[in-house]
Length: 420
Image (tube, rainbow, N blue to C red; front, top):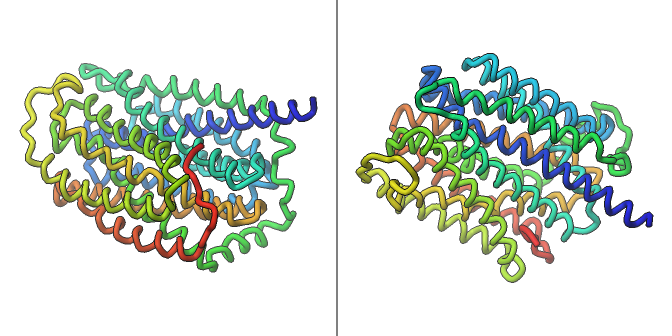
């Protein structure tokens, strides 16, 4: 009976983790949509619009840097509940504020909240799993849910957006606030008391902060954070600016441009699921190297063809030429990288170090995302959207080198899997 109660409790905790990640997937990755709307509604240029990514990612990095090591003593559940309350207020603030300043505040709040959510979720995963296989499975499935949450965002926003009413898109924010409240309720009634970081050493803030910094001296950690930085630089650079790419380069209607970007998120989710089956028989490094080479070929072969397309009148997906759907499929091939490298490193560390390590993951991921998005925004303005995405070949080459170095440092016998 006790065992059944423990299983039920763990299932409730896992459900709340899935829900939290799903909600924040929608909020975080709406930045590309809001960047497009900010240009069309608030009249800001590409470089100014890209500062929304800065507000989001820098707040993630700063909060993770200073708070991650203290979350075990604060309590993961309390941190996640506070994050959900903050972002509920921010979404309502965007609805009533209706300005570019309100958008900046929204993404600063979303970034702050997600830092608390991600560090907490990653750390709780370590507490509710008992083996590397369980850890890989839960980590990958949660990241997969995140990807499909992103895809849903690209349909939720157009559902509220009307061409004849420039303010209609704001009606999505009360709906998002409601999702946050539902997620808050699920988490509030989940018993996480036995899964808080009981192994927390009780050290002071300074000692914990120094311990996180010391981890950066490890060769494995250095190579890992470089890999995470480069991956997110590629992923966020493309994801954030894909709606603008379709709007400005292919000249698709705004709603169609937003929905077309969902193909990237769907491809990312499917890529992680499919890679899970492949990693059972093929080394993860072989899969990732192959995926990066294919991703580079997508950029070199497909982008030039899209730039030559002559687009007529577009009323729906059916009117878009087949080649227009091709580029976002790159997500299928870059998808397995992030969850695999995260799981490899976290599985190799003691559970009491997961919070500090997750802090580093979030920090360098946020910095990579900010740099990628800002650079693409600058390129959109200076060289044009038809050429901007070619820059991603540089971080792809760097990531290829860093993944090989990571593999040599880990030498893991058990191959990590993306899903089960």
